[in-house]
Image 1 (cartoon, helix red, strand yellow):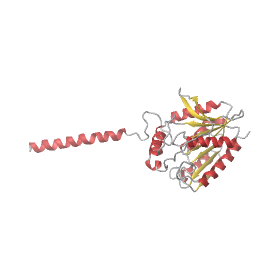
Image 2: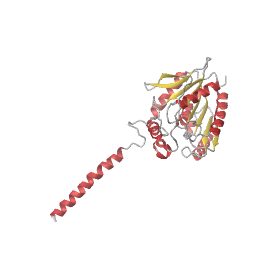
Image 3: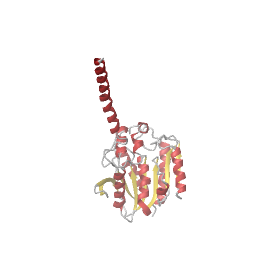
Image 4: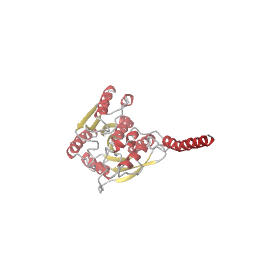
Length: 289
């Protein structure tokens, strides 16, 4: 009996020592891949979700070889940030802030910034680097970058970009996916300097009190087959904008998430062209002299 008791006790002690590390490991897995106590951004949980990651096919290779230059500007947190800048050929206080997809400030975003620059004319275009130089080329990596981008750092970068343009600047913003959310947040930060906001399939701000502080209307472009930013969440955004006394124009395409990115294998050329035409007309009206 004594031998049986010792053997049984040894078994349970071994079992406990086996289970304990597993439990400890589960406790230390960060939901949003944050390595400090920083606040997760509003799309961090989505970015860490494999189902959301699977909505994005890895981008096709593309190299930008156009105009523009990389610049640095100060941020309120005592650091600096980067941006891809296309300066108006004529002196202008009109600015378009361009916000990246979850991949980062890659060559596709630079090309898109140049397209707006060429078509808007006499507008300064600044594509803001929200990842401090990091760029992803595959979706798992993009998910980690987006989920680990703290709200504090993102806000500081955006405020730095706004300050770089100066107190007399008049702003419009545009962004896709992660950048769609950032475009709306940018408009909220710009205060009375905000003149326009375009958001492509980004997570809408749903806080009515925050939406009340907007000084511009919003053009929202979404896909009816988007399983990340769903039509239901877009409808809720429309209702909340109405409650806030603000105007939002929503264009819903029969398309998937990321349909406007030409480096995306599910790129919808027809829908993307129509969305760009709509966005350009809106931005021209908002940034006209």
